Amino acid sequence: MSDLSLASIQPAVWRILDANFDRAREGLRIIEEWCRFALNNTALASECKQMRQDLGMWHTPEIRAARDTAADVGTQLSHPREEQRTGIEQLLQANLCRVQEALRVLEEYGKLYSPSLSSGCKQMRYRVYTLESNLLAYRRRQLLTSAKLYLVTTPTPDLLPRVEAALQGGLTLVQYRDKQANDTDRLAIAQAMCQLCHNYGALFILNDRVDLALAVDADGVHLGQQDVSIALARQVLGSQKIVGKSTTSHAEMAQAIAEGADYIGVGPVYETPTKPGKAAAGLEYVQHAVKNATVPWFAIGGIDSTNIDDVIQAGAPAIAIVRAIMEADNPTHAVQYCLSILNRVPRIEGRG
Picture 1 (cartoon, rainbow, N blue to C red):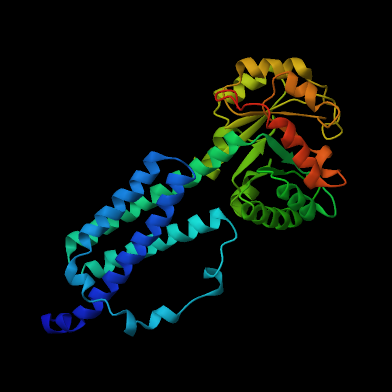
Picture 2 (tube, rainbow, N blue to C red):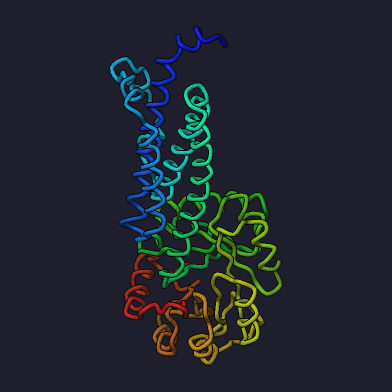
C-alpha cells in the first residue's frame, strides 16, 4: 500500500480506533463495577481500572478528534440479544467478549497507526482472557462458599419447573443427577437446567459425567467414589471449574481433600433410597467434618424437616437435600423453610 493510499484512509482508521477505545473502556468499566461492588475484590477491580487507564493514554486527542457520531451508520444497528440480559453471568460474559473484540480491532488497525499501540493491545487482550478466567472462577467459588443449601435432583416428569420453583425460593446451588436417562436426553436436560440456573445466578453442577459437564459448560462436576479422579476431571474441565466429591468415611474425606476437591459431600447422614444399600454414616461423621474438613462441605442423606435441626445441632453449616425439595408440594416454600433455618448458622471459613 502506498503512502498516498494510506493517507487517504487515515480518517477512517482513526474513527475505528476511537470507537473501539470507547468500546473497550466501557466494557471494562462495567466489569470493574461488579468486581468492586458485588465481589468486593480489590485485585480484579484494580486490574480493570489499570487497563482502562492504559487505554486512555493511547486514546490520543487526534484520534478523538476524528469522531463523527452523527455520520456513524452503526448507531442504529442492534440485535435482540443485546436488548436484555438474563443474568449477571450473561452480562459479564457479553462485556468480556466486547472488550476482547475491541482489543482485537485495535491491535489490527493499530498496525496502520502505531506498532507500539498494536503490540500493547495484543498483550492487553491476553490480560483480559486471564481476567475472564479469574473473574468467573472467583464468582463460582464465592457462590460455593456462601451456599448453605444444595439441591440434588431426581428424575421427575416436571423436573425443570420444579428446579425453577426451587430457584425462586433463593437456591444458589443445583446438581443434576440422573442415573437412568440416555445420554441424548441427559444432555438436553443438562443444557436447559444449566441455562435456567445461570438465569437465576445459581451454580449448576453435573453428577458423575465430566464429558457432559464440559459439553454444556456446567460450573462443575460432582464425583462419586467410583468415578474418575479429581485430577482427571480438572484436566478435562480446566482449573476454573468446581470439582466436588462424595465421602462416606474419615479416610474418604481426608483423601478427597488431599486430592484437591473444591467441596465434599458428608454422608449419608441417614439411610436414603437414593443410596440403596449404603449404610448411614450418622451424625458422628458430621461432627468429624466440623473438626477436620478444610473445604466447603454439605451434610447429605435423608435430611428433611423432621431431622434438619439435629444435623445443624451436630455442626453442619450447610446441607444437601434431595427428596425433601424434589417431592415437596411447593419446592419454593421448601427451599425457603430450609434457608430460614440454615441462615441462623454462620458459615465458618475453613469448614465450608
